[in-house]
Image 1 (cartoon, rainbow, N blue to C red):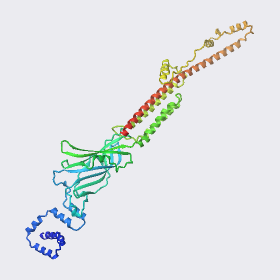
Image 2 (image 1 turned 180 degrees about the vertical axis):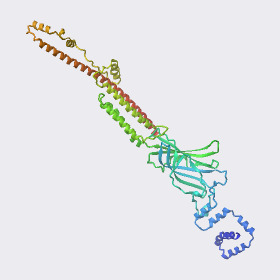
Image 3 (image 1 turned 90 degrees about the horizontal axis):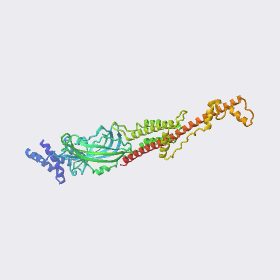
Image 4 (image 1 turned 90 degrees about the vertical axis):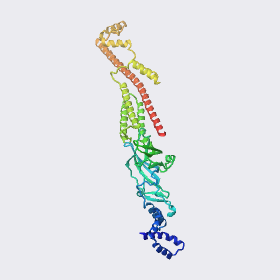
Length: 511
């Protein structure tokens, strides 16, 4: 054993002596002379070299690739299960950084956010240090991740393992700084608020913390300044549905039920949905249908086509809602405002149809239709018409029957006893008094009397029909005024509702 140690020692000293011009024989003599020395002296010389110092001399002077020698030098006696600090009281500070690369999906129903990030962390490993001059001026080296100590930094919001590529190496610098860079597909839980859909802004957090080690062992810090992290969009894929507004950071310490404190670093990913697709596919068709419903009020109120037109719009809107139901986000905790908008639009269409049915019922012509009550005429044709700037509507009444007409009607029911027009006998006396020829026979007078009765019946029928038309005309006037009143109320409701929604969505879009 001693002989082997002496030979190794001679192999280390041989290159130095050769540079000084020493001969080979001199070295052999010294070797033989050294072999005669006693054991305790040799042990004393060997004890003067620490074990790591001897490895350093071997690594620095032995032949072979510098990277291989450096790797052997660093990992020969390395214990990856021990936190790499000389003083156990000193915590290991892990500096981390996050760069958002892409927003892959936002699942509103399951409240899950899937992102792709570039994750970076570094820490100081006091057991991975060397002098670059001893290893061909190497200042950094890549080592397998499985061969060194790595902190147990996890994301608290993890709900699923993403498809992340495996990066098996880390960079180690000569002063002990370990740099661990890796891309991660992060599937995390996030409280998504979809009330403002499709103008919603989401704020999801990524909380990095050590799952086991307390702050006395592992502390966490931010690699870059918060301002640079917030505005960094250099690698973000900006052509998708979501727009990255910024990444906010927050450091805090917390404890669980009075236990030791833990350090954590929160990254708040603030994203905003681009609403153009949803505005074109959801809002514009609904707006067009509502505009057509408003235009339908210009159809004549006594036209039956208005009812069929409104029913067609209502059915079309129902089919439209069935088609877009899969596009709307669905959650168990709330309904987006656009869903409320669709429901209100459907309700407005139903009210429009009900108003149309009412007006058509009022102006519909019937044989036994009652005249318009006086109070309704006064309220609608005078008050409401004046309020709508329509002017006072004229109410043309059927003129009262003349005395002559009344007498004719009486004659039709009195037969030969009609005295106001003169019966046949009076007619004969009149003719005789005037020197007229004798009256016609009785059959002729009966024919004239029948003709007068037929004429009276025709006149009575025409008067009844004119009265019925006048009643229908009055109801048409009342229906027209009420139709304009309800149309303006409906239009004001639609405009107020639309302005409110546009204002809210504009505030949410540019806030």
